[in-house]
Length: 304
Ligand code: NAI
Image (cartoon, rainbow, N blue to C red; front, side):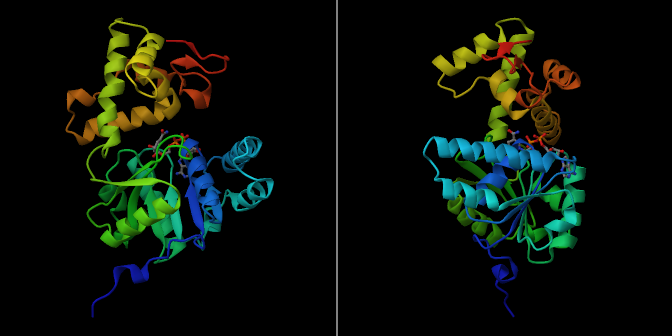
């Protein structure tokens, strides 16, 4: 008998409970989006206190939306009440959609999805926000790899319209369709992307950052000058240094390494010493207070 492949998927509408795993920059933004779209959301992070802190940050963002007249006090309360933090993975049971936004490395992602598959049951949809890792590889070893899909948001997730939807070799085409519909319901602009290194946006963005880093290394110009030129004259929203400080130098280096490896060590994608040294020094950008710039200052001052 022919089976409708969607018949065994959780339906993806506001009644779907959403689990977000990883409460960093992206996980927090995705959790907020889900709550704003009407879902009950459970946010999990391995680091003690991280999920609760993320929910406090979301609360502050919602308060600001009220002050600016973009949200009523009642709406703010409703959205806030849909968000819950947990430090027990088991509490995610019952969620129909899990969105993963943990560290950008293959093995932890594979390990997490194997646990989630057991916990959430056969019908749950598993989505990864990976920036660069093969969806096929992340799904490898799952009992039901057809239910795993790439769902790549951009930073900040609440504001950036684009999402890339990426199917791996085993991903059910009907799931890609369903994610497109859900993305629209969340107010996003979905684009199908191939399961190629860096998908679309990160592939094009790599040389943008790399060339900036090379100019700095060669002392052609200082970071603020390069950023300003690209912003004010080049028409880019941000230059390579301020943008990688927003992304996180650690996350950006992981993406660089992953694309470098996946392209057969094409030298165009090689990591640069400057970004490696920043990560080694813990200068991760905005999230740690310092990266290329010192973000503690009113006007971010260059430190490199
Ligand atoms: P982040 O460093 O801000 O947060 C990652 C969080 O995951 C941390 O709170 C950490 O404690 C937690 N974590 C790590 N391993 C875990 C595990 N095994 N289980 C549960 N929690 C775990 O990272 P960010 O920037 O939020 O990135 C997360 C993912 O999203 C990465 O895959 C990254 O490539 C992707 N991404 C990042 C973007 C960016 O601009 N930063 C944009 C789009 C995607």
